[in-house]
Image 1 (tube, rainbow, N blue to C red):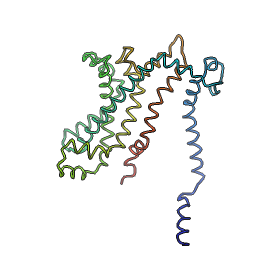
Image 2 (tube, rainbow, N blue to C red):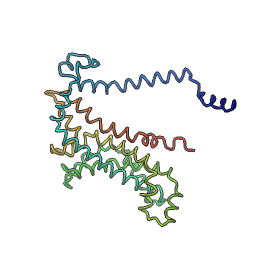
Image 3 (tube, rainbow, N blue to C red):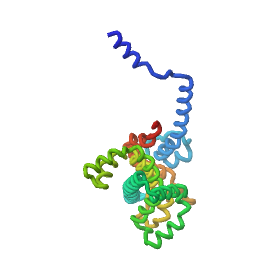
Image 4 (cartoon, rainbow, N blue to C red):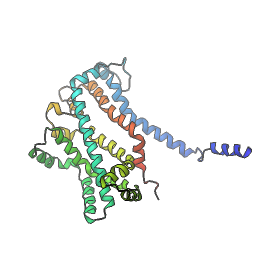
Length: 290
């Protein structure tokens, strides 16, 4: 009995002592967390203020009351029902296509040892090194000649084309953690190539898929340059393009703009919270591999 009690007491003792270095590290990280959260607090704070409180009060002063008129104005001025649907549609379809294409391409590159697949991997790596902002002119020229501008499938195609290089690179590096023996056993059992991928390989890629979905969704949801370049029709505009219209040289409605920013952030924040567990696992996989 005494031995059992001693073991339990030892289990309760922390393995690492609480040192001064740990305390300093926690203080520094807390300060940085506050600095990063300060802009977010100011945006949310401004979204509930009136214009009078905005210009006469301090940026850190709290509003006298929770003013929801800014959110109502944001719905009306941004035509939120249309712009929100457009942004969600572009992001969801583009991310879905990227997840499927990048996973299958990375699997082929990782498992096939021919020179063509090695060249393809290098080709995708080169695509990461070239910023897509430098390719705006040829991208627009090709899209215009193929009648892809001012179309939903055109902007989705552009998002897939500009995001596939990074997706293949990330998924290929993760593919080394997938045991080859499972695929060999599936082939022995009579599984086809597609069935092997979708039933054996793909379920093991959940952390990498979640990481890819979050990172690409962040970029596509918040994108302004491609959306403004490819779309000029009002019924096809995204949230970021619509929010930019609230900032002009003549007059700027900052309180309504801040309310619109809060609305646009919510879906991505919810997505991250839902996939956070897989995202952290996908970012740290292989870190302690040896």
